[in-house]
Image (cartoon, rainbow, N blue to C red; front, side):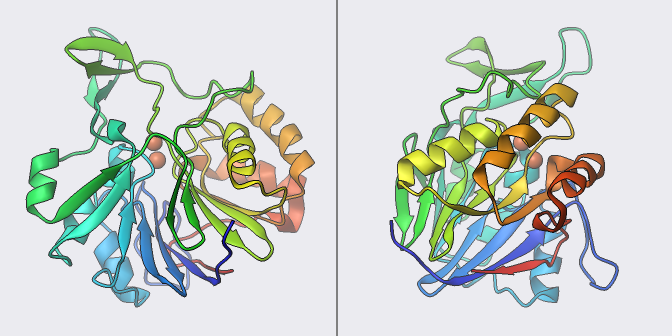
Length: 281
Ligand SMILES: [Fe+2]
Ligand SMILES: [Fe+2]
């Protein structure tokens, strides 16, 4: 595994800090700077990314690649805005980022939940999509997990009433496109989560297996733990104790109650996220 140095900046997050001029939204995006260039992991919904990039002096025109953790609109909706800064740029993700997906029960309030643009429109704006289902090396020290095997018996999460249409048939949507970005560093691996729909422990185990690393230095991103129920939260907390993680920044869809629980258990290892937060590696 290659190792790199650099800096992360949370460009979009649900939480803002009192001392910054950032705007918050229900979404997530991280600007990743390494010695080999800049990369954007997710784009938020599209209402705050450009504003926050200006406030925090991160040039959206200076990106090597864009990575989408999954197709949900709170991660992919800002793509149109970011593409305006480029003539042509690679956009990496699982093919299911374009799954026609919905949430809600039959006869109830059914809501479209996928990427809010079609592929050809985004291609016209300059997106050159590169799809993967397997673990891939995407740049020096950067890896995408590929599909995460769902192996734990407690990470069934917030999967109720999620469905999609594939080949004209209605399917249950287990969000196969959920991928995390892994950064190799001297201190171990850093894992950037989108929403962790596949379960944070499943993601950690797969990341360790695929990189061969036995050291998780840090985890940053949406964990969905606030939506996944008490049993999953408690079992996840117990499981996390095994990994001796040094930095844990549960962001976005974790929710303040779940972050507070994590702070209580893991003390200074856990920090509240906010738009504009930086992390050096
Ligand atoms: Fe999300
Ligand atoms: Fe999501």
